Image 1 (cartoon, helix red, strand yellow):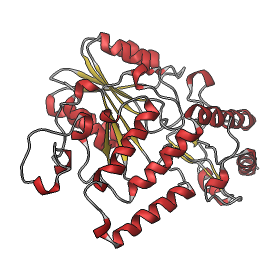
Image 2 (cartoon, helix red, strand yellow):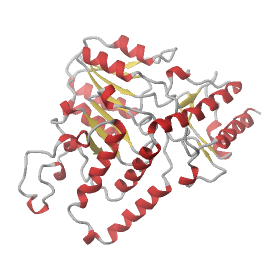
Image 3 (spheres, one colour):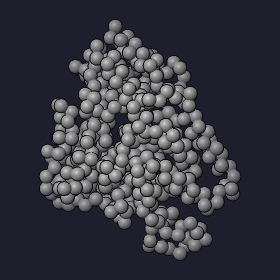
Image 4 (spheres, one colour):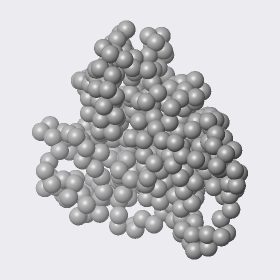
Length: 378
């Protein structure tokens, strides 16, 4: 269990920000890193060719440490949708074959695979939400010879319902199918080991649980897919691009590993220092410690909201850091605005009030949430 880390963030005491699944606040140190990086553009003559690679490779390495992967397995992307597009371009899918998704998946996941399925005459199957929240069983029951791809999250983005990805991935491999994972709502706060899951592709945006900036993310690519087709052809992804004087010696060969999938202009001199600072801090805290701490806060919120008629996905089927509180009749109109008027920030997603604490939260924030919910009922 970590002590509250609020002092590392700029969160006023009167604000209970319980909404990391929406967008994390930046660390004070990350903001300082970004300001310094932005100021560097004042003097572009100080930026040398090696600078185009230094922070880019550091970011790859730090992200790889989070998931037990090598730098070669990691590409820099601007958004989850970009990484999903890479996966969709490279994973085999043909006429009459199926892609499995969860009903209520984040839109980028659905739109990506719907478009790919239309292009090749395949079918997207949106698996219905199970009444007992056992998504794992629902997915396993749907795997048959027609299924060639499953595109899944670690946990559902509306309520944290958890998937047993190592088990699911094993069954998919046995069936000759592949797995694309969106880990945006878990990676950085919940342990994830690519060696245990063995996804074919995995994407993650930085602006949530990685405590990073908007418009940046990472793509993990399993070794067997690292010779595939990128969705754009930028110069820096080519072998020998470190030699700026020789860039017109055009190459067919790419930089090693997943680097061929990097977005154009991956050497983002402003955003990369911000992301790097966040990744360093996560590794210093320890993801397992973060998970225990946030899970403890979430468990207290579940216990204290039950008397108000709210219920979460049962703990044994939910990511510990993530809550989607539901009640009979749905989330009341105006609840989100009421909470914000009292300095409490959460999200309404689907039929749930989504509450996602982090280590900048403490018991006073929980008390403020409960008081605001009680006041709404009065």
